[in-house]
Length: 258
Image (tube, rainbow, N blue to C red; front, side, top):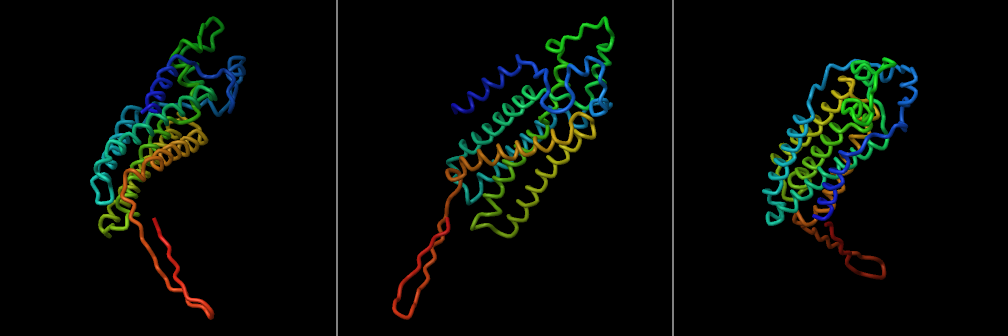
């Protein structure tokens, strides 16, 4: 709970910060202000195919549903359901904190940066475009990493892992439950991949923004799933006993799979 609370405080503090002026990746803001017009940030965008609120709601809801279903399986310790949702909350908050940290630190210009820059009249010598106070100019300097992608893969990843532990890898699984769970995993991860692809076709993100966002999301989901999964699921030991007979000795080999 301490980790979760700390993440929420850090996330709230990020809202008061502006992106780094000296982008670590791609064109520099100072060069653009001086007249440079790189093609990589000179693309047109008509908006987002999947709005932020819609994407976050769908994937968070899907992860909640997958977690609830998994905790009702025979493999789960049903008394530990609060821990399961704590892990999901930690995944959500940690992904948001890391994503915002990357965005502010790298300050990368979005593919449609010049479109917004021009629409605000910033190319005019008389213009007074404050990069810190203008929300639109601040947002188009937060390309790396993709928040849509990191959130989608974090939620899809956590939900997929919960379904896997409950129905795919469990020793008491049935063929039907395994098939349904595999389809659920495929649906979650395919949906996350589709959302990631729209961020590039919408000219909101570069390819590397999306790829790293997916890795971050899956990495965070895996971290918190592994942190809690031994407390969430019944660990059934399989004991194997095998006789060993040699020319001069007789014994037993005892092993266990947990």
